[in-house]
Image 1 (cartoon, helix red, strand yellow):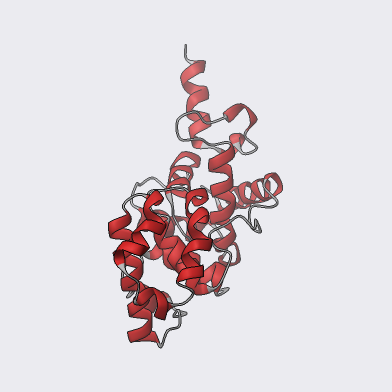
Image 2 (image 1 turned 120 degrees about the horizontal axis):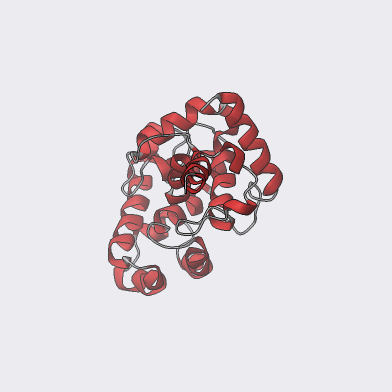
Length: 220
């Protein structure tokens, strides 16, 4: 895809979802520590579910020291509704201990250091870096971003590492952080995994998936 088409797509999506980049109902609102922990917990569940445990979790464990010393059973009761709660409890306790032992209780401000924390991959690191620390180091590729990158035509692979590289090549650095937010908004509202609403999509004219559908139906 040409970069000028990518720029048009980005502009159209920003117009369609003007609040996507600044929504208060996001996991990426809060301190760097909160964003880190909530993003780790968001695996295989919805943001809405994670936000429901935010207040009870951080009222009991407000900082890395408190969470590092958490009792597993008590912590699991708080996050039980998120699924995979045994593993997630272990991950966020281990992450908090790593913050204390390796970084003086602070969330590090580089990709390299963030990736040393248990439970943290590039998606989580990118979210923390951009939303909590104001650094555009990459593009967070979640399930929505991966699906849309393939459908629209930004990437030809299912490999999230390659998808991130393809997106970084297509968009200027200053758009990387916000791109994730607007693609997620579009994935939730319009470009559903099973039934995409192509008839009302603002970018259908630039979308590989839609062009393919037109060819298929046009040949009948």
